Length: 275
DNA sequence: GGGATTGTTTAAAT
DNA sequence: GATTTAAACAATCC
Image (cartoon, rainbow, N blue to C red):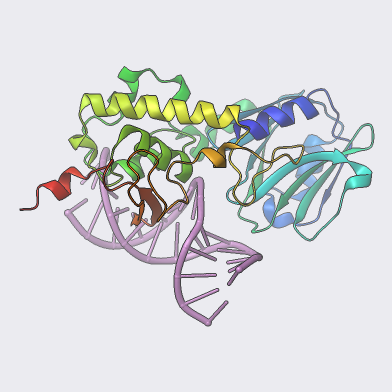
């Protein structure tokens, strides 16, 4: 999402939204008319990211919040290059014969409209988001997990605790830190959290430098794939050798989420207690 | 046609 | 009430 937002900011900042075609209103959390009235004729002042949301800020303070979920894409392209398939749900016309598209094969994604920043902040989901991982120092990071008894993997994915971490970066950071995904949060010592904090920041920064992670759908606003999938240590690598020890990576399900880890490098303290 | 896919919400359990 | 876990949901692909 960071890559999408940066790329969109370059492409859209200063451009006026001239027209919009709503081809699938189900992706809107407002009426077609409301979107048109609120957005058309206004310039995009900037595009930024918060958690996994891409936020389009218009010149008068109006905001469009996009959640892309699994397969959503936001693209800016030339009018003549547009192929209007059945998955293209929103089409904004821009100056210079360009268009801004929202496309989503599985229709899990959505676009939500806010008149002001205060209205955005009043949205329960937004209000409940935890801090951005890259903004936290080690002390604050450790503090998040103090007194928690749940397993570490679902806690990492909990957007109200820590914002913006998905399945990829949860698994990758746990591997870098040598922590089993089912380890209870209160069984991880201070050094463990230092390693997890370091690993998480490293994996996020490297993924951003590589232009994001593409294994099926992800592309940035210009349609370019990411490169970080070539650096995956565990994600989607079940059965393949661990890059550290050479052993086979295993896949388990933790609270309904697929989790890949190395049983040698990431041992579960709970399992060790068995006789 | 069942299972996998993901992020989030809701409900139930502790 | 807070925390944790399970289940449900969205739609599509293989």
